[in-house]
Amino acid sequence: MRKSEPLVVENPLPSRVAGSVPTIAPSAAAHLTPEQYDALAVELDAIRDEVIGSLGEADAQYIHNVIKLQRGLEIAGRGALIFSLNPAAWMAGTAALSVAKILDNMEIGHNVLHGQWDWMKDPKIHSTTWEWDHASTSKAWQKSHNYEHHTFTNVRGKDRDLGYAVMRVTPEQPWRPIDLIQPLTNVGLSLIFEWGIAIYDIELEKVQEGTKPWAQAKQELKALWRKTRKQLAKDYVLFPLLSGPGFVSTAVANLTANTVRNIWSHAVIFCGHFPDGVESFEESRLENESQGEWYVRQMLGSANLTGSPTFHLMTGNLSHQIEHHLFPDVPSNHYARIAPRVREICERYGLPYTAGPLPKQYAKVVRKIIRYAFPGGGPKAA
Image (cartoon, rainbow, N blue to C red):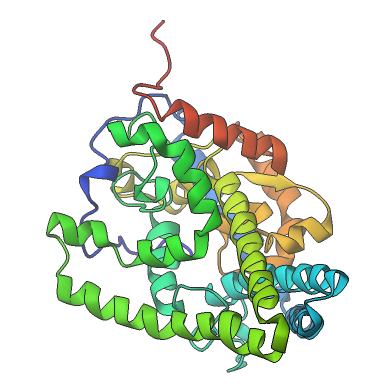
């Protein structure tokens, strides 16, 4: 998504994530002039236009191959789990199914729903028709993620993904006694991440505060149930029944695969948004925000993960979170190629390019969650 006309969220965010507190630490972009913002935008626009202009058969073949790989792994995993009473079959089937679910959510579902492959005009691989193996409905996820999060990235009071309304991840967010348990909240959320996101998308906190009608939330809950009951039936009734006497062991294998997928996606997403070096912003930042300022906010509000090509595939290329936030509708297979150019631009304009291996970045995320579980947390006065 490129910045265009100012957008307004339909309902205000609850006080829990209100953006009324001024930013405590100075921005790493404070030195940039309007002319530099404009020049930076020209350079990044050129990168995007170059990639869009190069899309062709090789890119189409890439997404088709990833889909074939994912479906092959799922078929192999579910086939092995028919014999789930055998420990080797259980391990192999669970591993294959876990990888299949990760690929379905990360490299395929997330990116297809961003419209990255709409240019192919393939009705089977299109943001308006795709459904994924995830508790969230595609429509609800696109609103909360594509629209609210990517438009208002890390803007306190606008971006609901800043702490997901249940955790304090910046010193500007007001502290509450319940924040003391947020290290445990984080662990629990990682285990049920897809369900946490699905319920979160209903915005029940707005119902509680009176800014969203219960009737609307009720309709969204019904839509969620229509989606999730199919998921539950598939993983915990239909395929376990095919295992005959291995019903329970197959159901446990499916639960394990879903949990592995949840923990992995939670870790990747949190490392892309909450480690040290990532900034949050005041709502006033959105006033008359230029394209260059929007680009800089995306770069300062995101962080990358380093690793191998296989690692990047398994993250859905969200290991290139900076590039993804700059160009969310650009096919993910191009992020690794343009990342060095984006990094060079950051260095030339004196902007940080936050990146590191997953264990190191996740340790920083956990450290931040623990620190902000207590009051305060801002920089010490000189």
